Structure formats: C-alpha cells, structure tokens
Length: 244
Image 1 (cartoon, helix red, strand yellow):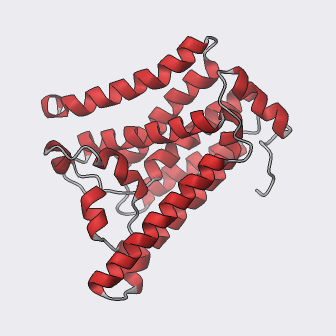
Image 2: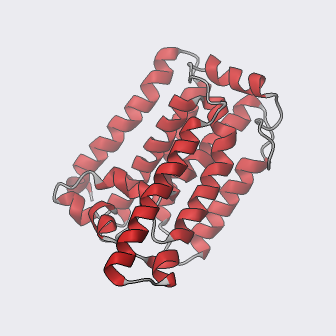
Image 3: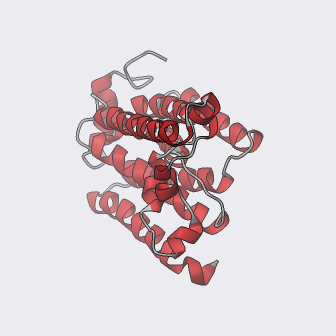
C-alpha cells in the first residue's frame, strides 16, 4: 500500500509504456492527484464554514449530510441543467455531502491515482478523471434526472477501470484495480443513497479513454479517442430533452 512504485515494475519502467502510448508528460510526482485532493478538500472546507455560518455547528451536518448554498449552486440537478445551468455537469464532482463523503472519495482517489498517474502521465490522467466525471454527470442527467447529487465518485470510479486497463496492458499486478472495482460495486448497491447511474457512467468512460490511450498504436487515435468521447458526451447532454 505504501509502495511508491507501480506494482510489478520499477518507476522508470512503469512510466515508459505510458509515454510510448502517446506521451503523457511525467506523472511520477503525482501532481494532478495532489491538486485534485487539495481542491476537493478546500471546497469541503469552504462549504463546511458556510454550513456552520448558516445553521450553526452540527456534527451530523458537517460529517454526513450538510448542504450549503454552494451545494445548491453546483450540485448535479437535471432540472437545473434543463434551465441552462450546464456548469453543474462539472462542478458536481468537486462537491461532497459531508466530510465523511469527502474522506471516502479522496482515499479511493489516492489509492487509484498513485498507481495510475505515473503510468498515464499527468495530462492524460487528468483527462481520464475529468471525462469520467462528465460521463457520470451525463448518466445522472438521463437516469436520475430529478435527483440532486454531488461527489467525485463518478470520476474516481473511472480511474478504477482505467487502472484495470493499464494493469492488463502492462501486465502489472491486478489485485488493486480488482479490489477497488469490487469495493465500488458492492458499496454502490449496498449503501443507501448511492447513484448507480453516476458510478456506471464513470466506469464506462474511464475504460473507454484508457483503452484509447494505452491500446491504440497511433498517436492520432490516442488523441482522437478522448476528443470523441467528450464530443459524444456533450451531444448526449444536448439531446437529452429529445432522447429521454
């Protein structure tokens, strides 16, 4: 768990296949992982202060189910997106309902990212994360249109499948991605309030983009897959009023 290398290979060897798959730009320092954790933690701190200022100190509100005006502005709401609030498709992945929700997602992000970012490179790792989050929001837009949701879990679940693709492609130890996937599937159905659509959307998009980066033989294809994925997701968002 504390090993600072991709399982099964020295750091410099593990990073090389990712670079050979299209040039990801380092990743050994895991700067994107650290930045994402810092941003999510900072947003959670801001929302916690807002909750205390508005409602007074409540352990339950801070740890489990607190909602601030920032949540109301940025959480995923299909009806709000219908009204033109498209930023919610992105902002939702940086908001959490309580500090325990944040902690759970950040621990899972750390477990997956510390192995995946050195393989993909920081730039491509960020693309996988953001597109997985967008895929999660798009799935919510269709399947849970009237439900208010927030959290990084859709983006994080995309890292699980991306890590599995990377481990299969580079013949690394599969135990971590399989455990993360198993944990994600079990908790999705076992815990109340989990969005199956959000997690499924993230898992699917993470796998697609990772396959494009790690399995394609040409640079043009590696570039085209994430761009095409983004276009498809945006088109699906635009067509939701017609297709849903």
